[in-house]
Every structure is written in C-alpha cells, then in structure tokens.
Length: 292
Image (cartoon, rainbow, N blue to C red; front, top):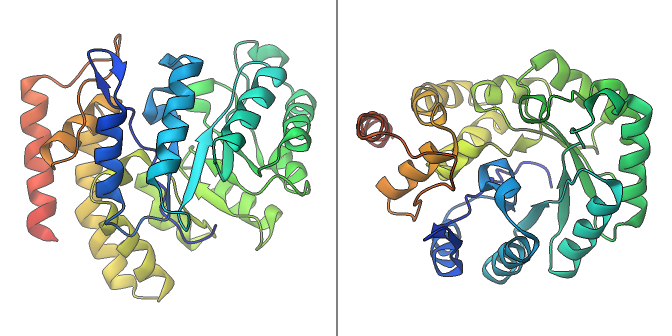
C-alpha cells in the first residue's frame, strides 16, 4: 500500500443523478496514469449526499473499471458503529480492498478517545477487509490524535491512517507510533512534500485528481532523493492547488472539465465556481501545463 497516490475521485452527476457512464469515462482516463488506486465515497466524492443504492453503484462500477493491481479504497464511515459495519461489509462484498473510515461526529461531546477506540476496533473485527481511520477535523470537528491512532495501529486489521490536518508534527508522530509497516497517508497537498520528509507513505489528496502523474512524479523524485526535482514540481503544483481547492468539490470538477475529464456540477447546496472562478482555474491549469 505504500508509495501510492490514491485520488479521492469525484462522483459524476447528470441531472442530479449518479452517472455510471461518466464514472467509467473518468476511470478509463485514470487507468492511463500512474496512480496507485482510487478512493470512492470520500468527502471529495460528496458521499454525504448519496443514498445507499448510489453508494453501492459507485463502488461496483469503480471495481469493474479499476485494474486488480490498483487499490480500491472506499469511504464507509457512518454515524453509528452498526451502520459503519454494514457499509464496510457491503464495500468488501463489492470488491473494495480497504475501507477508509472517518469518525462519528454528530454527538461530538461523546466522542471520547475510548468511545472512538471501541468504535474502530468493533468495525475492524467485523470487517473482512483492512480498515483505515481518517482524521479530518476540518469536516468532522473531531480530532483523532496520535495517542488514539497509536493504540489502533496495534490492531491487525487496522492497516494505516489518513490524516487531513497538514500538521507536520502530528504526521511525524503518527509515523513513529505506527512504525514502518503502518502506512500514513496525507490528505493535505500543501504539506505533501514536507510530509514525505517525516515518513508519510503516500497521498490521498483531492487535488491529485488534477495532473495525477505530476503528483506521482513528485513522490518518486523524493524517493530517489532528487530533492531539486521534487521541489520544482511542488512549486508548480501548489499555486494551482490553492486556486482550485478554494472552490471545494466544485473547483475540482471544473478543473476536470477543462482538462478533458467529466466534472459536471456538484450537488446542491454546493455550487460550481462562477465564471470568474472558471477563468481563474483555467489560468492556473494553463500555467501548470506550460511548466510541466
């Protein structure tokens, strides 16, 4: 699982309905890149808007279109332990290799370290596929610190962690506590290269949907200790990242449309960028293309 860029792919909608045709189109294009797999039903996939049947359709289609040597990671976090177990089992039945699980967060005050530990262990012990906790306090308001992740790393069916905070000290501590066989993935592009220096195993950043091979090359340059090339690629990619990501999933989808993928519109209440935003994204993408 190490040394992989795994984009959290978008969910394509046509007339507010999931389009498997457009999903297949995008996945075929991703298959020509060097990514190590795809993540479906992540936050960038607007998973909180999907009903169960739409989620199953996304997983099934992604598995059909993703080569077996590439990983299919599926977001299966729900508000209850029971619901998380059920969706994780279904994801496994449909061919997922790993389940990425954010913490329950509606009852934030009750989400103590012990409650979260028991939740993840219960899911791990009920799952036929390895699970990966996802620390994303920007979305959930619940922060899972190194102490909790360190305890969870001891479980044989908890296979790594994704951390979206961009906190380099925390990434370093997660890498130390988990050890060399416990992959730490980052969801934060601005600190991706810095994260590699402290032990990050790979990236699951939304922006890796855009110029995925350039992100792979950045990681490969770091691994072969070509820091000049790694920093060059970072300097090209991060200004574009800042422009696109400020528009959220709508910004990713707009960039995909510009680059020949199918982006389409996000589901309401999310909005697509304005015409001015589209122009800004177009210019940022053009600069990357010229620099690469």
